[in-house]
Image (cartoon, rainbow, N blue to C red; front, side, top):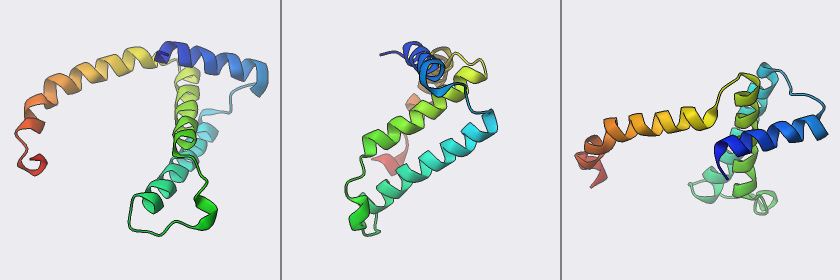
Length: 108
């Protein structure tokens, strides 16, 4: 799967099942909610907080996929080619950060 295909899959799903995209502000709120669900799992499962019994069956992968779905919705409705943006960002990070991270004493 590449990002362009994922964007198209989401767009097709919205048209066939979702009626229409929620507006950008609603999707931003939805994204915040989904990221919060990911944070809750991480904090309790991998952090210092104890995990509640009701949270033990939560699937981190599914919650991350929910975040990705909403990000893809936002990209679609704002006309962003996320594959192009991601490739550009990775190129920039690779050039900018390669030596910086290798020379970071905190990471050794």
